[in-house]
Length: 297
Image (cartoon, rainbow, N blue to C red; front, side, top):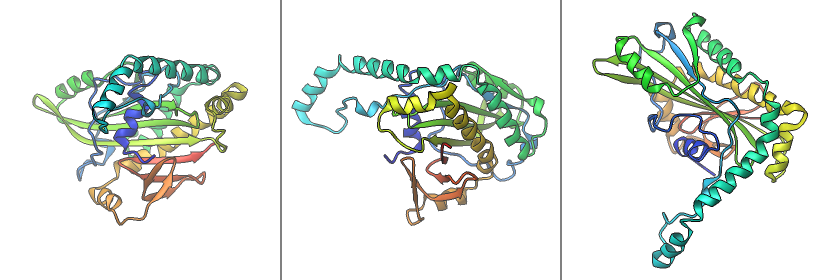
């Protein structure tokens, strides 16, 4: 499964059992590195965190749903047409099954302060970039991009940053994942100009895959979701570590990592150049995003 990040994001949340981000929000289709002279976070006017979720989300493997995108002629089209009324039912069944599987994880995480973890994570990451005023970092719990754009236009040209956070379990419950999308803009008359769009995906996967979603989910949910708590903590720690790395990216970095001849590594279904090894022995690679893959303790 070799997916570009844009395809991954669609697979993670386009049919998510819990919508985590306003679907009307339009993010750039590819990463945008900061222009020279803008990497100093101390000049950012504000840094907001958009974390709308109240519980860990599930995701559905929509690739199992029929599609006629590959052709199939008249007979293929007739088969797809006959399945049109079945597709919503399949999606509902997958959603229901995912909700059952994740129930023990959600119950164990009920008192786990993910918002506090996210705030602490971004604060420490921002501090390492030079943004020392922790009071300027806020968390919003509702779709805020349009309101943020409006405020941005009124605020002048001072750059503003927002980190959009989402977290979920993979369809097979093998992974717990945190996606952070850092968007930095500056106001211009009548509009906001995107200075940077930097996605970071942090994955923590089970040490052993039971090849049974229910058994994998039980592993995360056991003992008041102890392993899921550790996984979220580890995933957010990598977000903290990689935020400064993302801000420091240059077009030369992206060009080198995107070159066909650059040696690649494979981790968690992604194939890209090795950026670094994590402190826990995991892998950070590049595939249209900084992607961290670690194994749960």
